[in-house]
Length: 168
Picture 1 (cartoon, rainbow, N blue to C red):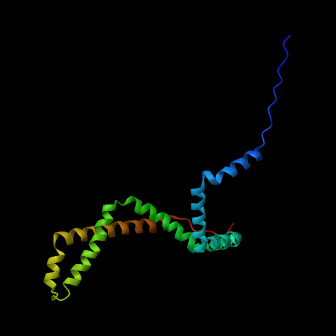
Picture 2 (picture 1 turned 90 degrees about the horizontal axis):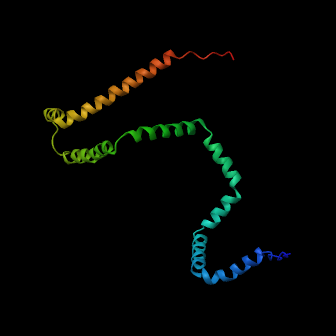
Picture 3 (picture 1 turned 120 degrees about the horizontal axis):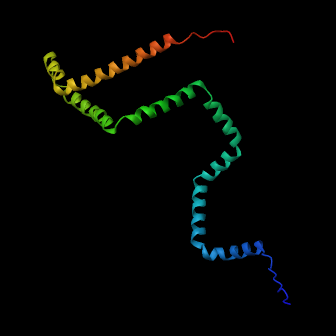
């Protein structure tokens, strides 16, 4: 009858393996280790390590101060307004902003260049009825009309809400 062959696996010594890797690491990674030392020295020279160390030491106090500062009605409203404006600005094509923001320096340049010329009512009216002026005026009136429509809908929404009662 066949006898089983004993098979014994020598236990691995993970500690020994790590020690061997650590001994060869300086040779294999010398450039990276030196670069890391250089980075650490720069962080130390600029005081960033001290700042991080202080921040870690005071992390609980900093968190409490941050929460206290954020937990105000003004901050909550500001965050809600920022989220609202993110949605509004996300719906506007960049070309629309380009037109507005390019018009500002152009208008300022024209206004400062014509500062020495005498202003006349007829000259201003001629410019006001030009195609470009009327187009800008139309855009402004469109905005005002839309704004008024939204104000009107807000007023009607306030009127239809039930008054709050003190009973609870």
